[in-house]
Length: 609
View 1: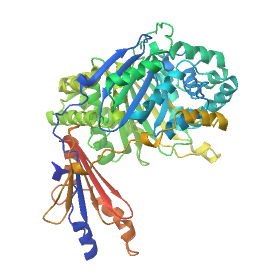
View 2 (view 1 turned 135 degrees about the vertical axis):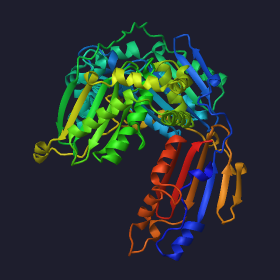
View 3 (view 1 turned 90 degrees about the vertical axis):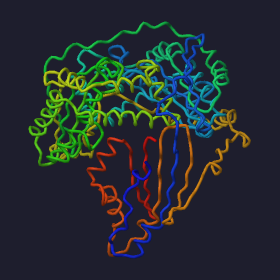
View 4 (view 1 turned 30 degrees about the horizontal axis):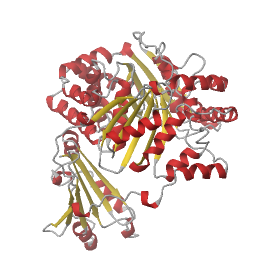
C-alpha cells in the first residue's frame, strides 16, 4: 500500500538541472508503524472498572506505547443542571477549583505540573465538567494528589471569587457579546431549545454571572463535585493493580457527597420552521446555517443520521454538498456539518459560507434539492462503503494516542457507557441505504428546522466596531468553556515549599525508549534511502519523506515557486487526476500531506494496513 500513499515524484519542469536532481535524488523515506495487528479499535478486554467505597468510578486501560499516564476526571455536572437564575455557575466553579486549596495555593498547580513534565487543563460543557493531566508515569501521583485535594478542600476565597467573577464577565464580553459566532450561537439556541436547558450558555447569562454569590457557588461545588458523582479514567504505561493502590491512597480518603436525583430532560416536537436573520460587524461574508431537531447520537436513529451527515455534508471534499456548492456551482467557499455529539437530543447541522456573487435563495434551494435526493434515491453501495470506511479509519487512528483513548473512554462512559466504545462502529457498519432514506425523510424536513441567515453589518463596522470572524461551516451550537488554570503566583516562600514537595530528582527522569535497534534500512535502486520501523500496537501504516529542497533555494527570478510546486504535488499525477486521487483517498481511506520549510519539502501518508 505504501506506493499508493506517495505523491507523484516526477522531476519538475522548471528547466533547472540542479532542481531536477534535488527533486529526484535527494529523497529520504521513513516507513513507520508497518503493522500486522487486527483492524480493531480499543481492546475492550483491557478495560478494567472499579468503584471505591466513596462511590468514585475508576476505569483503567493499560497502554505501554509511551512512558506517560493520562488522567481524566469527569464530574457528571454541566450547565444543563444549573437552576434558574444561576446560569454559568458550573463554569464559575471550574475556575474557582484552580484557585487552590490550603496545600496547593493559587498559582502552584500550573507550576507543579509543568515542572514535572506534564500538561493539564479543564473544560465545562452542557453535560459534564472535566479536569485532565498527562504526566510521566512516575509522576502521576501528583495529578492524584491535586485532584483528590481539590475534590473536597477548595477554599473559594471571597476576594478571589469577586475577582474571578469579573474575569469571567470579561470573557463573556469577548467570546460572546462582541464576537459573531458566540452571539449567533446563543440566539440560535434560544430558538432550538425552548424547553430544554441546552438553551443556556455554558458561560452563563451576564446578569446571572454578576449576581451569583460565593456561598451559592461553594454550595454547588459541595453538592456536585464529589467522588460519587465522578469518574476517573486512567490510560497509559502502568500496572493496573499498582495504580489502583495509588488511586485508593489519594481518593479513598475523600468523603462521599450527597446522593443526587438528577432530572431527565425531554424535547417537545418542533413547532414549524423558524428563521433568524443575524447581523454582526465581525462577519465578512454572508452565511447560511440550517439546524434540524435530531435525536442523540446513540439513539436508535443516531447511527443512520450520522452516516447521512457524512454523505451529505461531512468534512470532506467528496461530500454531496461540497461537490455541488463549492466545486460545482461555486456558490459557497465552504460547507460542512453533521449530527451533533451530546447526551440529550440535539441537532443535525449544515453550515455554509457564501461566495460574494451567490444569493441565499439559490444556496438554500440547492441544499433542499440534495436533501430530497438523499431521502428518495438509495445511496449506492460504493458511497455507503466509502463513508463507513472513513468513520472506521477515524475511530482507529484516533486511538493511537494515550490521551485520545482516555478521552474516548471518558466521553463514552459519561454519555452512554464505555461498553459502547466499539459498539458504535458496529452500529455504523449496520446502517443500510433504507435507513439513510428513512432518517432523512423523518428529520431533514423544513418544518423541523431552524434557518439562520447571517449578514455582515457594514453600518456597525463603519462606526468602528469591526472584526474578522467568519462563519465556521462546521460550528455546532454546543457549549464548551475551557481554561481557569493560569493564575498569578503566591508568595515566594509558600511557592517554594509546595514545589519542593514534588521536585523531581535527576534519577527519576525517564529516558526515552531506545529505538535504533528497531530500525531497518535499505537503499532503493534509484538511490533513495528507506528506513523502516515496525510497531504492532496499531493496524496502521505511516510513510514520511523529505525532499531536500525548500524556500531557501529559490532564485529572485521565480520567488515562491517552491510553494506552487508544493501545492501542485496535491493536484494530481501523470497517471491519476486530482479528482481520482481525492476519490481514492476518500474510499480507501488514507491521508496525504505536503509541507514546506526553508530547507526541504516534506510529505507524509497515513492509512490502515
